[in-house]
Length: 410
Image (cartoon, rainbow, N blue to C red; front, side, top):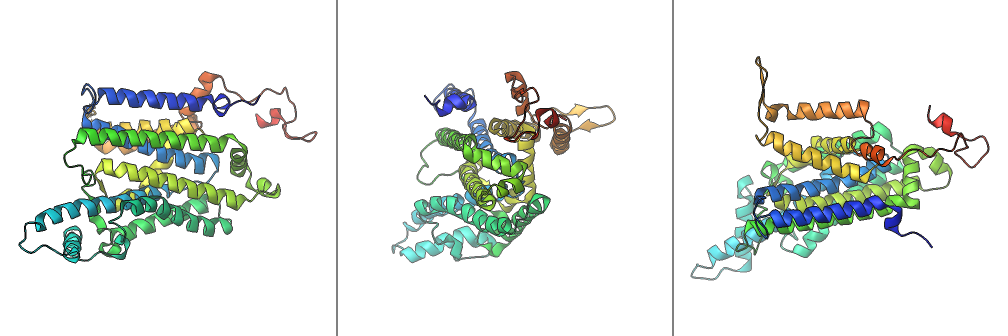
């Protein structure tokens, strides 16, 4: 009898169980349905952290398992936020404008309402008309579809051009970073159609939910973020546990050999790159309504570099490692930069963690890279006693005299 998926991958069941217990605990301790021990603002922080864990899983799939160091995946995260943010701003402004114009003696026409909405949204950048990219901003179903389609289409086109040219290694990383920089510079322009440097704001005000307390809205977004993380983790674990996972690991370790065996390396890389962009877009769509604002700085290259640092600290090539790294660094960042960490007086100088947090993060990344390349997740392997199989010097390959275990350890 064949073992079930969870029997073969007990870490998946452990992760889902811990996530369910964590979600239940936050619900019972939150202000909406519990004791109020956890504030609404901290529930939002935890919900945003879960979204960052989801995009970290996407980064681990594309880098830790496939070997593609993408320095542009946070751009897909931001695009997902922009797509849902357009609807949130449009629908909320429409309610405000309709209520204001309803007091007029002559009822306004739909065109007058639409013009008033455009002026309200784009007046800050000197505009009064909707750009073409807002053509479907009034429709929630279409904008939800664009959360998936826009990041996916960009990744598909970029990946097809890059992978078919067999760009690899550091050159591919530079290309992904250049793509992110170009997107950020475009979004900074006022004529980009997305309000330039001002970005989209007020996203925490959900249209039609004005009578619902923020405590309830925040816990619902927290539930949605937890469900998305569970689904993303389960999908990623299913992908890497079978033949597909073996192929992408082979591409990571020796791309030429996998191609020689007859596999479509470019096809596998393009699929993973596109799928992870979609996952990042979904994570962004859940993150920014909880953050309340999105601007071009969110898709700057430095954000994607931070994402790679999270995965490296947590342990790339381990899905739970990516989650641990993202959650740990995100929560520590909130604590250090939010003024909650006490200053460290040294006599001759006082360390203010708001200014020194990035230095501490960089130092942590260097130390992990030098002394613990398996990351924090590698500690779990030590506790669980996971080691390379002891074959007593047997052949590692199918042929006599192939690469031996003794050689692999050197």
